[in-house]
Picture (spheres, helix red, strand yellow):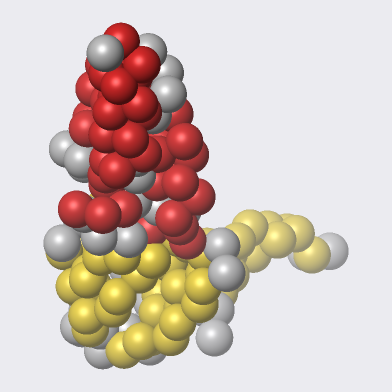
Length: 153
């Protein structure tokens, strides 16, 4: 009877291995907003890229994390942010199964990690772009100091 219990325990471990992949999702829908609206944003992550005009909703695979988001609007500088997927509650399922099975369920954690399961992006992000304002530069010519106001284009 002892071997039947062991076989059942291993079978149960295999059945619930990668529980975050089975129960959770491997991608998130993210609402991207900017101040000002109508900014052009380029998203780049591991094996992922997208280009959107805000406000926009994008579906991003968790395995792409971290995702670099670069946004530009007329009169504003290119502003770059990092969007990262954070651990969600399903990842604790793997931890519990690893403890309960003495580490046998580590395969599930590896599968979940490779697929990006057990993590999620924020439902909504708001990015404030930096205005492109004139910057003062002090220059010196032969007759003395001159203040210049430069505006990037």
